[in-house]
Amino acid sequence: MRMMELISKVAAIVGLMSALSVGGIAGEKKVPAKPIEVSMAMVEIPLSDEIQFGMDALRSVHPEAATGGGIGIIKGEISEILERLLKVKGSILVSKGTASTENETGEAVFTAGKGKVGKHGLKSGERSRVSVHPVIDSSGNTTLMVTQSTERVTGYKTKTLLTREPVIAKQTLETSMSVEPGKTAVIGGLIRNDGKRSFESLLLLQP
Picture 1 (spheres, rainbow, N blue to C red):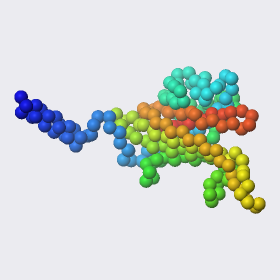
Picture 2: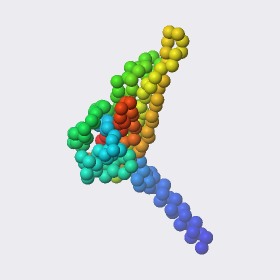
Picture 3: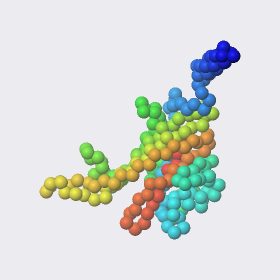
Picture 4: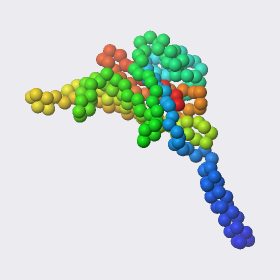
């Protein structure tokens, strides 16, 4: 009996090694071998009693959007979704464009903002950076590993009689989500206040 059990275990190990050598474990994620183009758009939505979260605005113009919390997946192109979002009163297009993962980090990077940058970093205004790392599974779906960061100068402190140093507030948000071909990922969460009202950014991404 023990000999039969041993033979069964050896056969199972050999079978596992064979599967790994041919194609890996089912569902295993891998970094794409070829560069991937990622499209991006960022919209700021004004918050109010009717729209308390950016996703509320998205659902109001795109009722079929499947959203939960601060993320969502929508069937369709970014341009169509963006067109609808910009019909929301007071909405602002912050940035849009396309980036490739053809750098050594395998990430698509977007930057936006009106801030002035000096030798040692942000000097005034604000700037945003979005880093997208796509990973593809065996079914062809793409998981987007996203890092958003926003820096904003909120004031200045005197360093010497002739110089002043900016006080910078920074927000960072990390998200990962699976996106099927032909669909757009929507991520919300970063909020800013201009002294009169608050805005929440909605980030649209499509690999």
